[in-house]
Length: 502
Ligand code: NAD
Image (cartoon, rainbow, N blue to C red):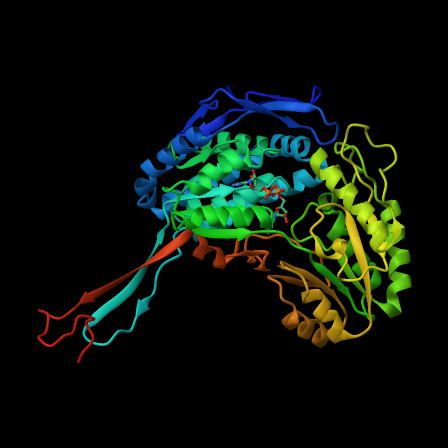
């Protein structure tokens, strides 16, 4: 029985896990509700996996791991291309499911789902092009490396971009010969389950791709701690990332951590202010601020502060917030009640740390049970304020005025995070020298963040380790085997244990 979406009733039925090529409830029979962030109402019951279910999924992935590793790369790529085609064919349903479950407004969810085949195609293209290298060693020998998959990889996914984040790590893992076990976030399991149906239809062998649904501390922790998991890609909060890294350390699994951020948007006095305002609004209002790269620290030069703020307020007043299925909507709700309370708390903290310049309340006309918050801007904030240091994960920006460039850079870098930054200036020398000095994993100059399969994404400092996307992601899903071949007829006398000529 396949997962069914009834948009009129806002209900999803038959949400079951995908394990070893089949559909399963939790072994315990347990389930939990997933909630529509626009209304606070339950939309589905989802199986609540525990260590038993995780063990079954990992065993299945392990069983087929060698067969999948030695499946021709061209054949693995073919399956990924078939999957890309199925995602495109089912894009509308996937987008509606994602919107309902995660609170993305429909047009954004459609844009996100429409992009997913790009990731699958990118990694399908690379499947047969990633290899080792030859090494010039002394003596009559041939030395080279093989680049091999890790084995079973675990993919622990957050709720903000559920399907995109799943695909951006599973596509390289599968292309490069790993078998996968995915644990979606408890708030947003549905698109992963629909995607698993497409994996099945595409014809991937049973066990190569598995999805277990459940809570982080239960299913997530069991997956991270599983001794047969060789690699873990965790995307989520820095705090949970540290827990996952500790669990992984116990069995020495390779870990990619894509964690939180508190990104600066820097506005120089010569910036195109309309563009800078647009990037700032995208930066802290995209998906109601629930974005790892969210530009929530707005460093605006004193000379353009007033003009920038005036344009910012005009732009925010024009933004339509509310019903995710209304074609005019530009911002939906926060994911759940916990996040709603957290953001509201930070807004109260902000009132004592700065001046509330815009927003702070509930957007007019939004549904009562939904988790909506107005875009909120605080001015007169210093970089040591909590609202400037802590990841709020809501549409809340702190405007910090600056005049001295060295102090600006010091303040930007004075953060435990180092994920991303945006720089607005027409002076390319200034833009590039600023870029070199910023301690972050990515910089956009005169532009807002756009996620692409070919550009590496990841953090410095407590924003993470390893890279997703781009050629750099190959390192996160492969390991090296070194091989040396003796080309002489026999081993020469006098060769030491290391094989080096004496
Ligand atoms: P989270 O850390 O609460 O949860 C992420 C995932 O980890 C979920 O699947 C959850 O069930 C699981 N989890 C929770 N506790 C666990 C445990 N003890 N062991 C194993 N797994 C566990 O994060 P979230 O609230 O879902 O997502 C928001 C966070 O994700 C933000 O901090 C955001 O910046 C970050 N994020 C980072 C990136 C990036 O690419 N750097 C992308 C998106 C989101």
